[in-house]
Structure formats: C-alpha cells, structure tokens
Length: 118
DNA sequence: CCCTTGACTTAGA
DNA sequence: GTCTAAGCCAAGG
View 1 (cartoon, helix red, strand yellow):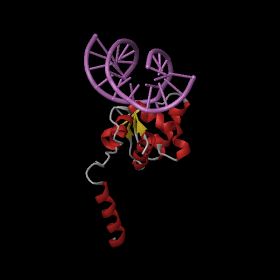
View 2 (cartoon, protein in one colour):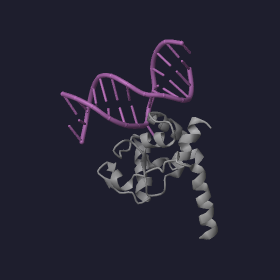
View 3 (tube, protein in one colour):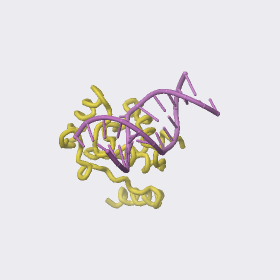
View 4 (cartoon, protein in one colour):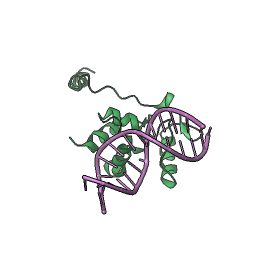
C-alpha cells in the first residue's frame, strides 16, 4: 500500500458538505506530520475523481492561490458549505474521520449486515 | 547523497 | 487581522 493511496483513500471518504484539513487527512491516513505531502497527493486529484476541494488548510482556509483557489471555493459553496469571510467554519463543517485502528474488519461486517437487514 | 520545492502547521510578534 | 520563522517530510533534480 503506497503513501499516495493511503491519502487518496481518506480524501475519498470525506462526504459532500463536509471538509477536512491537510493535517487531519494525513493523520487519518496513518501518516501524521505529512500535511504538505497531502497537497502533493492531491495534485492528480481531478484525474482520480477525488473530492479534493474538501481539503482545506488549518483553520478552514483555502490555501490554493489564484484562480484555482476561487474554483475551489465555488465548488464548496455549490455543496452548501458556507464561508465566513475567507474561511470555512470547521466547527460545523469539519469531517471527523472514524478511527480505522479500532477494527476496520468489524466495520465491513456491520456494513454487510445493514445491507442485508435494512 | 545533497539540495530545493511546496495546495502545511504552529508559535510569536 | 497580518507577517515571519522554524519545523516538518516526500518527491525530483
């Protein structure tokens, strides 16, 4: 399992209407302290179909500069994420990753059950 | 191997 | 609110 795959898997889990930070994605992917590399992994995000726009800098700020930054903001607003000035209110819109350490296998089992049972 | 580059983060002023 | 400095770390030359 490669580094980029770990990052991309986590970004993919961020639901519509929620956001995460570079740092939190790095931690959730099992690579704490590699926030800058998360941005690296997102360079090919569009090609991979990842919701890259939901990843923000610390404090809910868009770090992507210029035109791309405006594009990101637009995409987020379309998803219904409100902006307070130039930043997102993480109190309301931050996605908290479930801790994968505590039994990812169990979670798969539960999901299968819920599909069967309703 | 050394050095530079970044869509980072935190702490201080 | 802004700005700077230092720490951080994978990728690429």
